[in-house]
Structure formats: structure tokens, C-alpha cells
Length: 196
Ligand code: GRF
Image 1 (tube, rainbow, N blue to C red):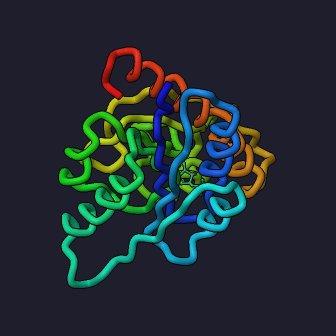
Image 2: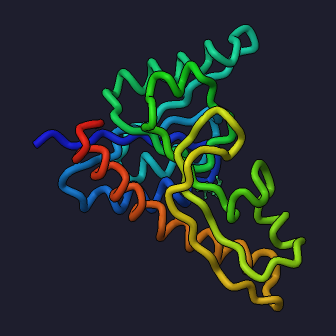
């Protein structure tokens, strides 16, 4: 049976990418075939190397438009015959050009209970709020900022005594645990429907 070929796009440390790569090693029907970053020095590229997963930095260039850069990303993913794209801390908004290439096949995790706190610094914003709960949202990606159909949200009860670092650590641990489970469910569902 042909395995479902997953790509991870990430710009930073890559704790989510790491948990996905480790989880995928034990799956028989899917595999992470590449990690792609827009940041040359992103730690996630080292994590990919340590996990024996191919990685690629796709360089930005001032002469390239957003669409041209996204096309370059698509060509990179195409070269790995990618079926499904996972965003894990990828700090760019993807254009229609990219999304048309992978229709309904791009997923993201956001560290807030969307529609609360889209965009950057979501943990900081929830920490600064009076909210009693926080958490993360996994959603399909469409053109807006952290919009797109919500697949799963999970909540944590906030402990008012937590420092920001403790608060964020608990949030990230939840993300790292939840993301692989949901990815598995989504890609298997798409496969069952003949969409992958
Ligand atoms: C996570 O909080 C994720 O929800 C957000 O970016 C962060 C990436 O963290 N989109 P990491 O690089 O996976 O550790």
C-alpha cells in the first residue's frame, strides 16, 4: 500500500514538527517526507536531520512576489510528491496560488481558542486576558489569517499562579500531543473519501 506523503512547513523551533515526525515513524500508512522552512537557521531543520527526515530551506528573495515564492514552495513539495501539507509554526500567510495547489489539503495549529486571538503572540494575548481557559485550535487553512474550518479545539483550565513560561509550556504540550492524533484522523478520512 502506498503511504500518504506528508510535508511539514515550519519557521521556528519545531516542537510540533518533532512530535509529528516521531509519531509518524510508527505509522504504517503515512510518512513525513520532508520539512520545509522559510528560515535558513530554523531549529526545526536540525530536528528533521536528527529524525532522518529530508529538509529544505526555500530562500526568500526580494525580487520574488509572494505568489512566485509560494510557487517555489509548491515546486519543492512537488519534488517530494507530497499529498498533504502540515503547517507547524510556519510564519507566512499562504496565497491562493499555494492553496489552489493543495485544495483542502493544508492544516494548521494555532495556539488559541479561535476565533479568539488570531495572528501572532496568541499565548501572550491569552495570558494577558482574564480568560479562565485557553488552548489550541487545529483548522484547515484558507486565505485569511487563522481562518478556515475548525477541525478540533482543546481547552486547558488556566492556573492563575502559573508564570507565562509555565502557561505556555502547558499549552505547547497540549499542542504536541493533539496535533499528530488529529493529523492521523484527517488524512485517513480524506483517504477513505478518495481525496488523497
Ligand atoms: C505553536 O504554538 C503553534 O501553535 C504556532 O506556532 C508555534 C510553533 O511552535 N502556530 P513549535 O515551533 O512547533 O515549537
